[in-house]
Image (spheres, rainbow, N blue to C red):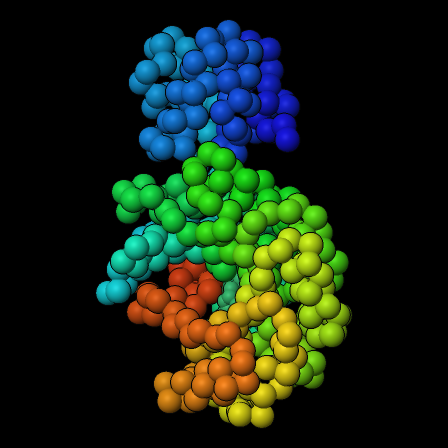
Length: 369
Ligand code: SAH
């Protein structure tokens, strides 16, 4: 892979307007670049360290570089976003709104636990999938994120917590399989440049025809999570409009192929919506669909959003649903959303903070699709 930064590297002196951000480049690519700038090779290693471990936001921050050269390359884009808003929930989950260079706002969450620091990253500004229970879906779609805008989210959380990030989930705003190129580039950089194991990274998708296969071809060791939410086609279409173009049978067949190709099991996410998809018969149907499948079900009790009147089932009902699946031999766990007090449901914090003008733009773009 050639980094865009390297591919478009100018001859000296740095012509910054033609450069892509450096974030996402490997140590070798950075070394090539510094050498093209007339600097010794070891400056590549220093640059790599400062970008990925020392929080450099500009090359002028890198105090080990000679003053004169720092001034020359001060405008070379590193690819860091600006912090727009930070909110801490009582359970120590931290939500960040980041302002991208074009003024768009995205959401990232840092979720600490005893042994882990998990980052929930966004892959798009908004989301075109329009799932009925999702705050991001209600806001429409604006654009894909570039790899550096995804990598920046993880560095932001790592720096804020002053702790190494151990896990990454692509469960923030957006549909990662509509932005595979940038997502795969970011995953490779997380692994290579920040030292996060691919196995500790989960890519969550609602399912896009053909794209699970395309992701499989990259042979990542990441976990694939599929947002299923219903075990029958009609109910799934009601919750997820795009499901109309992706029959459940085909989606599950593609997941089976994914397991075959990658040797990794698939996780199925299932939002529990009271009175809609939480009956004993629906648990049985779900178990039946997944029989003989190397998989795991993650139950997510619905996190209320303002726009729709779905209900979260009682804890008792959540436990019962879990029990029914277990009885049927399905591997299952329950994931309660963290940071509820700070508008934890996907896209909520951004929806409450974004400027009306930006949101109107989002709507008009999504209407064209
Ligand atoms: N587009 C991808 C990833 C983003 S959403 C996908 O659909 O998988 C990440 C997860 O959060 C998905 O399982 C999604 O269904 C779930 N989610 C969205 N809104 C939610 C809500 N209000 N309550 C609980 N889970 C929600």
